Amino acid sequence: MEKQLGQLEYEKRIGNTLISEEQIKAEIKKAGEKITELYDGRPILLVGILKGSFVFMADLCRAIKAPCEVAFMCAKSYFSGTESTGTVNIVMDLDRDVSKYHVVIAEDIIDTGRTLKHLYQMIKQRNPLSLTVVTLLDKKERRVVEFTPDISLFDIPDYFVIGYGLDCDEKYRNLPYIAEFNQNI
Ligand code: IMP
Ligand code: MG
Image 1 (spheres, helix red, strand yellow):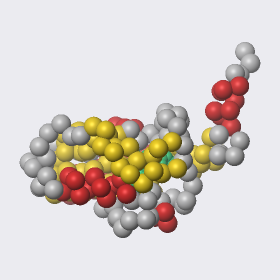
Image 2 (tube, rainbow, N blue to C red):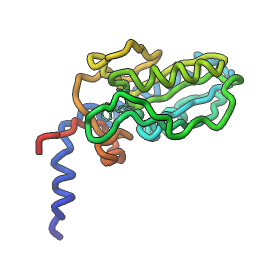
Image 3 (cartoon, rainbow, N blue to C red):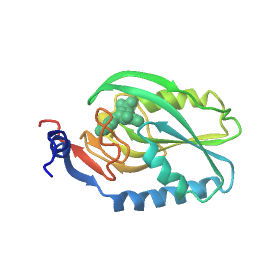
């Protein structure tokens, strides 16, 4: 059967693979071990920032070999396409009091740093036992506000990337690896 135009265009926009499934898996294993050691059996609340972190969260929580609860927050910082709006909207807040937990924020990517800086300050004010940030990807050269994650799995150059939870206009989150996005097609 011939491929539909939509399918062909979809495929053409998937650029070079930047990080393979195997590389992601290996780094998540190490991050899980680090988090397990760091908290040594104390109560962890893993907070995933939706939507981008849902795939990362699913793998990261299974790499942690310690008592670990999960929760989600939904923040929107991208208006559409690849352009940042600069404002952070909390679309869905946490469902519990964080003061009895060592909170570990799991984010898909840190770009300008605005989203995480905002969320970090917001959660910090709620007095968690401790607060740690783990990000799958870090685009350091794009920072406009100062923010350094505690654990970063991969530093990447200034490319717009898709896959493994990351989207462009809500698509490509289901790609199992990280690829460059071909904008000029
Ligand atoms: P920041 O506030 O600029 O650090 O942006 C963080 C958010 O922008 C991330 O949580 C992503 O949702 C989105 N974002 C930034 N860079 C990319 C990218 O290369 N691909 C897909 N989403 C991105
Ligand atoms: Mg995100």
